[in-house]
Length: 114
Length: 111
Image 1 (cartoon, rainbow over the protein chains, first blue to last red):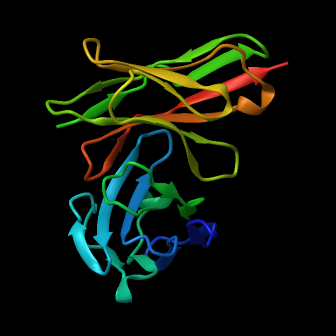
Image 2: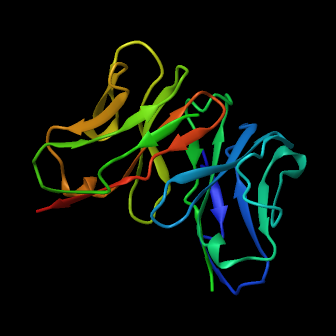
């Protein structure tokens, strides 16, 4: 069974550019989460989808971040325009139950904004 | 609000020595507790979890953790570490809606 897949694995962009991160969940997992780890700090929650609906987006930093999950399958997280402080590792996780009792994480996308 | 504290950012240890990685949490409600591990160049992997029942939880790769409600702790232990245990370890709590992580502890095992 395929796990959670994220791509790209690395992205280096200039300040002001746009970047789109993608997450492919485990098949059948309706709950999809985005997290971010800024260097040296804790992994922080960004948002939670249940199928295609945003259940909780309280962790989104600002309106430069846009997450979508059209059709309830894969999800994208777009940063436009990117700022230096957006650098970090973005993780996607999926969970079948929505209770976070067994969340499966992708390998993460390391974003560097220069 | 919930929070997780991992006081040790780095723990160096020699191979075959025991290790304890500390985790304390704060929450006004019952929570689930987790330890995740991130090996170099890999994603987060669930090591073990406490949902209910026995306070001593056994996980993969010989790790175990003990839930202590009175001390609000969930320390991770292994009696004898291997070089391959070198990784970053994250403690997390959840009251079901999201995971809240600590800052991570980097375990470095030396030969």
